Figure 1 (spheres, rainbow, N blue to C red):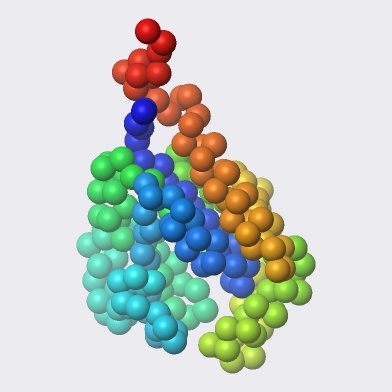
Figure 2 (tube, helix red, strand yellow):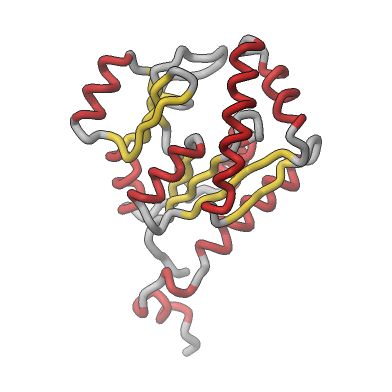
Length: 206
């Protein structure tokens, strides 16, 4: 009935908090939501698809794109480079679609600097110990890598006050977290200040 500009949602938090599961569920339930695929130099995990989960680049190709200004933000995480392609995000927002992305915490801070109106959402488990359980359950990383990820997670928790919302992804109750996250997106979509007078005229009584 009314339309408005596309909104940028940034879902972040420690590795193992369950961001992938939550975002995938939202994409199925919210047709005007689009996922912003990141580029990375890390090797694909089992089941990951090029262009759907990540754009997998070698370091030389990544750095060339970075030097050309092709990323909103870039960061190095656990020895690998990650970046958010600028062109896709801008075109999708301009077309009126909402965009959701899930960078690491430092990346989220950089996105906020580039897009001050971005809505930042911090996802955490109900217990920090569950992070290790979830990382082990992936069976994609060595114990050494998991230990580094947990150390990084402790540092990432210090940034929680820089976010707009927190979503607690309780163990065994992901559906609750999905509903909470969807409620945040819906509430932000219907804030009055996001709509111009021409859009609001469509809801005036006649």
